[in-house]
Image 1 (cartoon, rainbow over the protein chains, first blue to last red):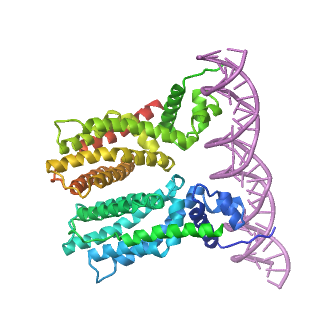
Image 2: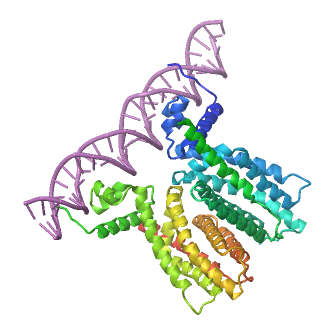
Image 3: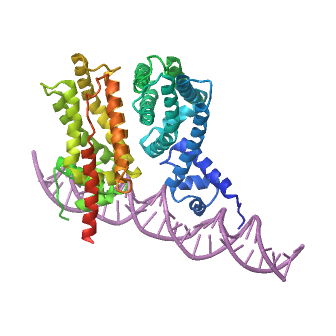
Length: 238
Length: 238
DNA sequence: CGGTCTAAACCGACCGTCGGTCGTTGACCG
DNA sequence: CGGTCAACGACCGACGGTCGGTTTAGACCG
């Protein structure tokens, strides 16, 4: 007797927020439905009143992320006074800045999310994002074609390929970053990988060489330094 | 009292064979350790005498597949009297032929494997294969550079990119094939997708246009026809 | 205003299944 | 005959998911 009743959307978002926090903290597989309801202090039945299954919750969470990403992308695409090359560069820059600004969260996410147990999360995230973002990306490519600086085989397919490669590069780079302390040479591999990716984009788009720049050794190093600092902090706590 | 004792390797392969059959039939997630031991008529403990965990079994199975693939790839790479373009083309042709020859199995696999529940399987398969095959692939690219017909940014990275894109194209194409009965137009989308992929490879390799041919509408149609036939067979059984 | 009725938010005991453990048993070989 | 190791299988805790029932807020009405 006596429990709190909330509006549907409010409770739903509460579930999504809690799940997001726990997924980021422990990963999808290691977060049980019980963990979520315990933290919210609600019963099992309540969870299944809002979601068909645990995977359904994941889908809705992914959807929420995607919605935000699409909003940001559309804003960029519809910015005037920027040519296609500038738009793509600021697209990459925006992602990079986001990562740098949230260093701590990013490092935590790298360590937690990039395990086999979170494959489903990453995969759903990627699939849904590509589906939603590629059309926006293709618009920029089309603009570039009109401006005469791009010459892709197919705007939509090229957009998809660039995204696919980005995801793969990202996964590999994260793996390399996580063992950068042990293997300092990884930073060179990362730089080479990003450079190759950058050149590949130019070729796929048929853009002039040097149109884009993704890599800055300085940026990569930020994450190395930070990891070392984190270890120091841990040691200090002991 | 009274049970069969087998040589370590024999039992191990028996486990791998049984697991492979069941994974192909029902998928990784839906196949429980109990399913496997029931079919082999051994006890739970026996399973864990051979494998650390269910995931460990998957890893070993993936390893077995990869070993076979690498063997075939090395054979192709070391074939003389073939130039780089011919090698790549016969590489693609070999995969295509393998799929066509095992139509029934392929269609079964498409339906079973390409679900979220088998992500781990596909992902491990892909990761491990790339790791093992990309170096062989890179050798062909290097040969092409020496022969003056390729001009890639980086042989190893380009190999990896082509594989990554192949995986993504494959996943998308399978999804489109599976709903080809409902949406007959999918065949055009598939053809366009493969064509775009083909052109992308040429650009990444810096190869002359028309060097490669992956697509043949005829081949795609084989799988459509076969699906229809399968449905007829099902109906006849009723 | 107080009573009543309904939809739906919420509850939590319960279930089957799963991956994994461990102390024991029995087969084979030197 | 003793040691080694394959093989056994009862058992465990945790998990995702179910279901019949309870509580609440608020609409409606006399």
